[in-house]
Length: 268
Ligand SMILES: C[S@@+](CC[C@H](N)C(=O)[O-])C[C@H]1O[C@@H](n2cnc3c(N)ncnc32)[C@H](O)[C@@H]1O
Image 1 (cartoon, rainbow, N blue to C red):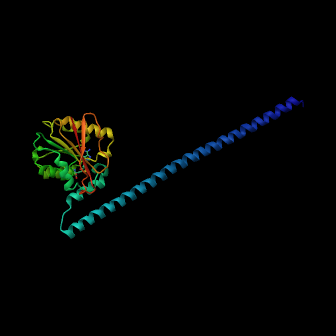
Image 2 (cartoon, protein in one colour):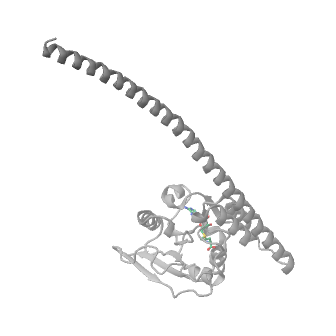
């Protein structure tokens, strides 16, 4: 047999062998892909199941802790013959929405008094309170000489709103998000406000939202009226240096848990 024909035959054999191997290899790859897909599905289900199990366990633990705290509070009340209704409401609200409630306990009297002291009862117009909660600052505003009918209480939590309506029937309680103040009070506010007192946990919101709140509040108040805000933080809740805005801080109020400071902003 001449050499090129032999070579051609060999090449033909190699080609067939290659095709056979390629087919086998493709089938193996196909099998691996299928296996991977099956395993991927099973793995996803396993992860989902584990996530659900952990979530349930966490929720159960959380529920048990919640009940334990409530039982302890009840026992404490019974033992001491007192009712800690407001504290319980506050703790419950904090447990459910820690970032919205922003504190574990209502403000103490000293802090509430300091906040209210910046509101001049002789300045006409309603007084807007943001985030009154169970009403410690509201109480201090009344003690400061503000007539209850002048109070406009803006609160997010429906349970606190119900409590405030029952406690201060002459006040206007507006349930809603204070960060949309202008829209929320349009149609409710009949004249420029004499001041805004805020118990909102401002630091849980980005700066641009805090600034928008401040300037919306300025837009609703008479010129020079104060925007009063407390904070547990060392730094001002809204920057002190703003164009045409003056900011002043109170002494630290140590008789509060935790100690706090009051900041007052006015637009010139
Ligand atoms: C730190 S607590 C202060 C409560 C009360 N002023 C005090 O000093 O004890 C914050 C309050 O603000 C309310 N709050 C939080 N975010 C709010 C929002 N976006 N609009 C209206 N109220 C809000 C909470 O429900 C809570 O009552």
